[in-house]
Image (tube, rainbow, N blue to C red; front, side, top):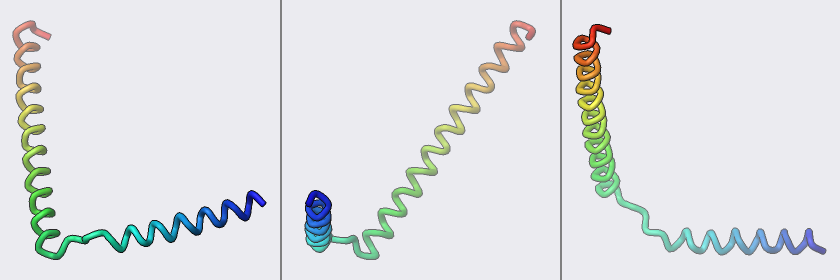
Length: 70
């Protein structure tokens, strides 16, 4: 009997999930295009910030090594 109950519970879960998916408002093409653009710009900005931080820290470490002769 527990196996039958698990199957019934699983079926109910799938039916409820399908009903919830019908309520979702999916983005249209313009919204999707704008969101993609924002994500790309943000990713490039973060990559540039990380690059600059790496460049500054590398130069600072090299300067310290040159000062102390290592």
